[in-house]
Length: 210
Image (cartoon, rainbow, N blue to C red; front, side):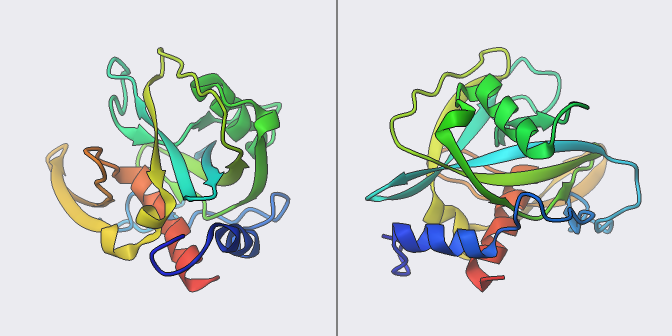
């Protein structure tokens, strides 16, 4: 049960209502890394398509979101918190990208995921257009991180991530410029950047019902 009284079944029902269908026309990103830094999306750049999966574990005691910590040896975004996902291959639809990458990165078989929709595309400062999908996962999946990409797989309570009180606006120097971004610190882990931006987009929909 969530703090505001929304039960597990009500969460799923609301998500089914507010998420875009998988086959709906995909809009240009209206959110991105630049939103808080004077360059709101869309910027008009040619973007590389990518997709991520927000896997939700459904239990009687509540709902949690599966996230990963990227391997420390990676050349980009090392050690950062992220959803499983990656760039689209030419032969696949974006939801297939999200499912393929999830199986490769965390050992989540596509057969154990029930996709229920997608939400706002997100433009990253690195030139990707990320389309996020939400999938329901039954408890009992044996996640297996790919050590070449993932250092850790963990769960964070859905109600914590959807609560605007936990969306902290922070800033730091990056490449000689002051950058502002959202962060959602939880249980010793620092969720920030594009991942936090995507979660905020989902929370905005979830909390307003549109």
